[in-house]
Picture 1 (cartoon, rainbow, N blue to C red):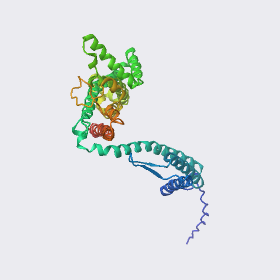
Picture 2: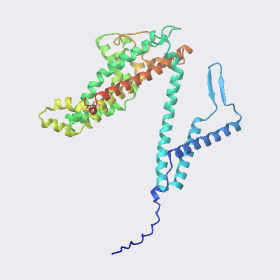
Picture 3: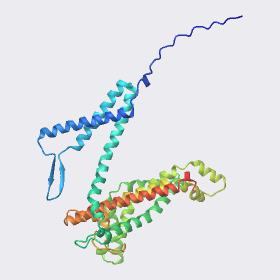
Picture 4: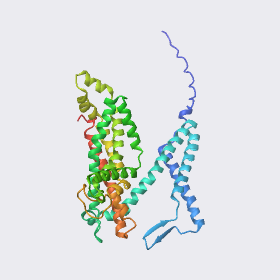
Amino acid sequence: MSTTTTAPAAPAKPRVKNALTAGHLSRGQVTGIALGALVISTIVFGLLWMLSGDPLYIFTEQTGKLTLNFNWGAWLALTAVLYLLGIYFISRQIEGPRQATNRFISGLLLVAFVLAMVPLLSLIFTLVVNGLPGLIEPNFWMYDASRPGQRGALNAIIGTLWITGITSLIAVPIGIFTAIYLVEYGRGNWLSKLLNFFVDVMTGIPSIVAGLFAFALFMLFTQLSGGDITQIKSGFVGSIALLVLMLPTVVRSAEEMIRLVPMDLREASYALGVTKWRTIVKVVLPTCLGGLVTGVLLAIARVIGETAPLMVAAGMSVNMNYNPFHGAMATLPTLVYQQWGFNGEEADALAWAGALALLLIVMALNVIGRVISYYFSPKKDR
């Protein structure tokens, strides 16, 4: 009979704490630090207000405006500083210096994002509060701005759609075809270098210069044809002014999207004997269609809110004009400029409603672009 002896188990070594995972702040703790910074900042500015002796708010009956005696910018800045300091030192004690630095940089990015969103949200809130009452008025959608007591923006809405539509109809094909040439055919030749130079120059042109260029161009044509130089301003002239501003944006965005298409797709198409132009139409453009649509929408958003070139080239009018080739044509930006601060409360309400309508049009264009990008994306096998 044999007996086996079992060696005594070695004593367990004490676990060494990893410096990289010494501790961990939960999401609730991070939120608590942020709320603590907010509370401390609020207490500090509350004490400053109490010591100042000023009223918390001032209501002006003549204008109906409510003014708060509170420094929102300094309050947010102090909150951000306290949050960054708090998250760094607390994380350094619990998680170590490496993770503390990581949380400080992440917090810095978060603070930058919040500070960037504050003016945007403030702008949207101001537009909605001041523009919604005028926007829901039936007169806004039914009449032009020439009727006292029944002022509307129908003339400006139609003018905006006409001018932006004509501009897009001209700029989008030219811009995309130019981008195709620069990427697929140019390959660094003298013409592509010249095109790149002029596109870069056009990108930095001030908007008022584009309006002066379109006005001077049509004045020259009118003088040569013996026409009436007092009737130069029209919606079409405004479209040419916006074309100068929109075209470089379309070219650059389309060029970058086409360059992102992998060369392997082109080579596979060429290997099957497909011609170059058919490869571009059937392979390259469908692949980057979502990016092209996004670039076109960015270009439209770039020009739809322009005011200075349209004041010079298209003019301003309170009357309805359906003909973009004859007579001054109003747009929403020029309507806002024309009505604000000149004709009383009714005109001011119309200006706010016009600004909100312009924002809604841009948002609608973005939604349409998202839908087109979704349904024509290569990932959806369409």
